[in-house]
Length: 493
Ligand code: HEM
Image (tube, rainbow, N blue to C red; front, top):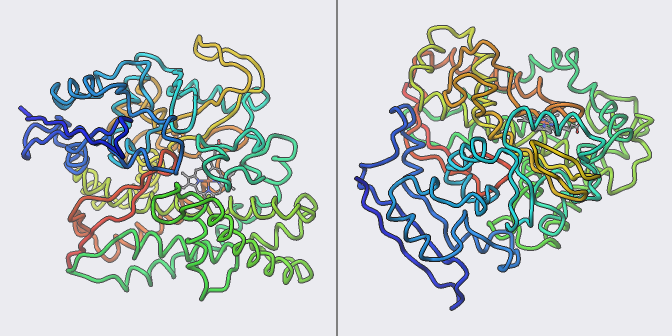
């Protein structure tokens, strides 16, 4: 049995849920997961509802609630109730937007309850204000396919739960945060860059760069896969898509990280700072635009935007919004899947063996990893009128969050949704790319990059477990981006 103890903290003398619940199991007593996911269990060992939550994003303390506990006594009860603390949280107190749930990889514990007990759930108070959680696959599709009722428009706060008050970048006009008809014409303008003909042209270059990056990796020593592989390759890809000066390509990743960072988590402290850094991005990209607008149209993203009727007269903030969308969209999502694939295969060794025995499974392994990782945990919409969803009355102006991370684990839609299986019958049947008119424009490009990484990796290191995860991953603290800051890996020669 797990022994449990609870530590209570006082922050600045105020009693605002300064609470840590730590289940110390001494290596025993971790939740049973059928032995298939040792790393995940290790992460669950420490369930923390901690003081850092109160500092995240620099938001107002009175808006905080922890993941359910309204008072200290309840918290102590949970701590003594063993590993299933999440079963005990009263339904009305569940707040799945708590970033620590994602960093500690335990959000699914609450999502599975919501899917069962209250699939369209209202959270009254969270660090991001009140919001609805949509947790079942079919309900998410219903929201996605009804943009007349559920708007993406940036003027209502953007397309994530984190709205303008917390991140001024997310309310910039960008076509992901627009409704038809403007959305449709702007999307069409950038689509050629990721059309099949262009991808076919890019494939050789991506393969060459990937092979070079893998050849340069250290062998028989521990390194951070996120830095040396995932970030490195996705940064190279972005530079290719934008035809961006090669020597400055690290700036692209930096701007992407600055755009999505929660305030106070190391990268960005204030909104002024964020906007100043993104201003540098806008200036740089404007320079490239000015060079290309009068040149022969190229097939890079800047040229496409500069030469399309739909986008050539964009207002400066719209240009910046769309550039950031393309930087962020194509960057950490793919990056985190690249890291997620190594982790998933290492924690499901039978699947890794299957893959090595039959590399033609790489494309379906890629899709399965995109589902399993769900690199963006959600998208948000705003209701334009009173409406009904799953028997609940959604009011005009309500924030509606579609949790892809939950829909992708919905057993009513996906068989064995909680297992990682690289040879599923329908591996592309998932919500990680969204659905409907906003479905990810870069989905085939992402799959291409991931496929090539594994084709090249298995050529060099064909044995299961040769690319070995040798420590715990450090996950990103965010209710939006599901990813990794670091993943220690060792490649055996
Ligand atoms: C595994 C990698 C990726 C994932 C998981 C992902 C996920 C998503 C999601 C969830 C959406 C919103 C869908 C919706 O609201 O229904 C989206 C939209 C978008 N993505 Fe991706 N994405 C990935 C890769 C890429 C890449 C490589 C690009 C680069 C071109 C890209 C560019 C975009 C753009 C421009 C949109 C906006 C589409 C629209 O509003 O019409 N994404 N993506």
